[in-house]
Length: 310
Image (cartoon, one colour):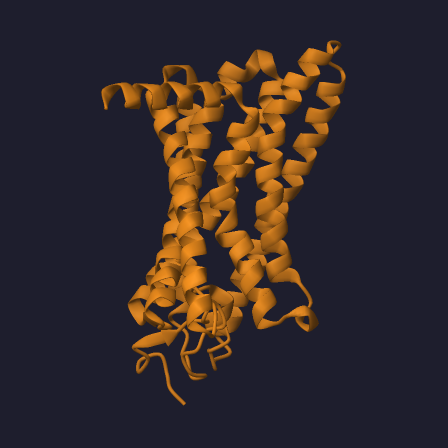
């Protein structure tokens, strides 16, 4: 038996048992992280440098790319280090920091995806009011609200989780530090406070989900009323990347946290956690760039300028 005051480190879940598989996982994680860094880095650079992309939609896409970079940098480097050096350790402070930043970027991503849904709704359903409702100041306020809310939410979760006495060892059933795994180590009934926060979180996520569903019902109704086929195609093409990114994010996270206990197993839990924490940050840039001609053109101009200088 131990308590939180005596715990100096936690043991994370090993990605593999054999040395060959550990090195394979290291290479896979390295490839995924490099793809995420390249894709999100190109989006951030293109939006920041190209004045054609200084619009609300691309402003929020830049913020989304920042959250994706933050998310991949929070969990993957430590997992790569552990796989390469055949260790499972993470310090108590490192675990608290990892949990804080993971919750922070997850909350920021959900907030930004909801705001981007509002952007698409106003753009298609209220085009005459677009400049009024989504001016530069309004966009800055919404982005600031998303980041601030995510920071306070993460701070609350982290402080509450690590204030609990831990007396069930220091072994976590996950390859990174997350709230449910640390709660399993608690021996205090005060963890009901954290369960209350999780219940509130579920309500907020459900609220974002319902807002998204309502918005897209209105969007699809408006698009179907567009007389020209070209106009409908253009409207749909601006919505599909956002819808794909949001669906990937919500479906994998929801299945990971809401699946029945009977379906739980270490290998399945590990696969699901990789799907919602590692894969989306790497896929999101490619989902957005595949159907967005403006973004592809900006990236090409950026790359051409870089090659000319070098």
